[in-house]
Image (cartoon, rainbow, N blue to C red; front, side):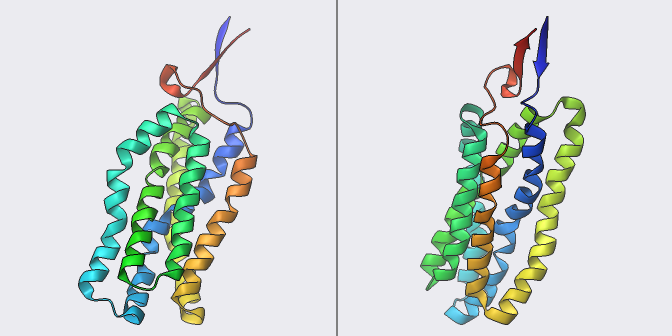
Length: 204
């Protein structure tokens, strides 16, 4: 008799890791705020600040089709980890920036790395949960993406006020990288392609 098995038993546990994961995707938005502070320190013009704040969305939007294509064809968990590492390193590298050009590069890389986030979320959600349970899982993801900016804005202001804008970038980037360890150790290695790429079939 044929049946459908959604991911394996560790998949929900792994997907719960996506709540803190989702909460870190605020980096593209909230990491723009310290640029206003460092802009004053580096003597950036309002026009340059505008470019920096929008640059993230240039690569983020342009890379979305490629990100979707990749997660449909390759191990979404590893791809997500790679994108997560890329945008975390980009955030940390912002603390080393010496001017407009280097800050612009970090913002562009940040957008490219984070472009994998939502395509990967959708694919992992479809593979880890049956249809009747995806609403709550999706709500948890979205809650994470909103809790991140709420907490990050507060903590970011405290860090900047006490230690300056460079430590803010270092701390946020390094803290995000720490999350990769539990992510890589939990759950399945891949969601197989076929049948919408979200199910595993077994015969009993």
